Length: 89
Image (tube, rainbow, N blue to C red):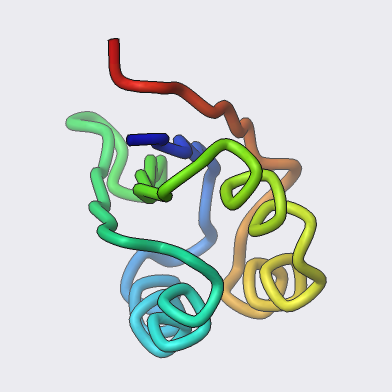
């Protein structure tokens, strides 16, 4: 199993979460098998998201999807996200 981690700041968590949830069908259509959302304990606008994929190639394709960049901008993501891909050991 491949897991994509995405960490970014958002301007307003509630607004971001609404947009994130609305993006769910696009996630599923682009290979996301499962997802989770976490907030930093000391800052609710510091968000880390995980997405599970069948392969590294699927995760890389998702990162490059222009719909993802558009959705992130519209959801209030501040600055560039930090993204990394892992495989279960």
